Length: 95
Image (cartoon, rainbow, N blue to C red; front, side, top):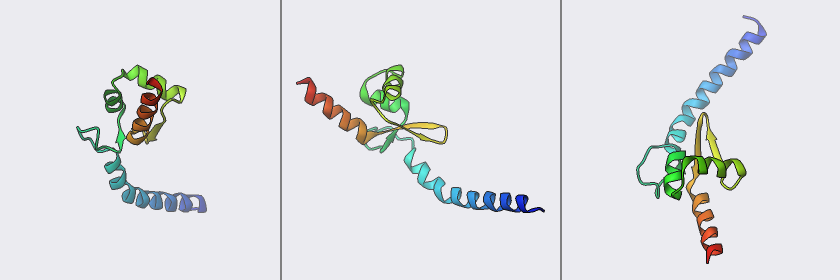
C-alpha cells in the first residue's frame, strides 16, 4: 500500500468514526413527529403546513431569502424558531 492509499484509508476510518457519533444527533434533529410545535426543525411539508402556504410558495421564500433553509445531507429543513420569528414580524406589520 502506497502513501496515498494509506492516507485515504486513514481518512475513511476517521470519517466513519465521526459519522457513527453524529448519526444519533442528526437523527434527533430530523425525527419525524406529528406535532410541528415541538419540533426544532421542520421538513418542507411540515413547514408549509405550519405556515399555511403551498410547497412552491415555501420554495420561493427560501429561494428569495425570506426564510433560511438548512441542508442536512440531501434533506432540507427549516428552523421552527426562525419561522415563529418571521410570523411575529408579519403580525407586527399587518396591524
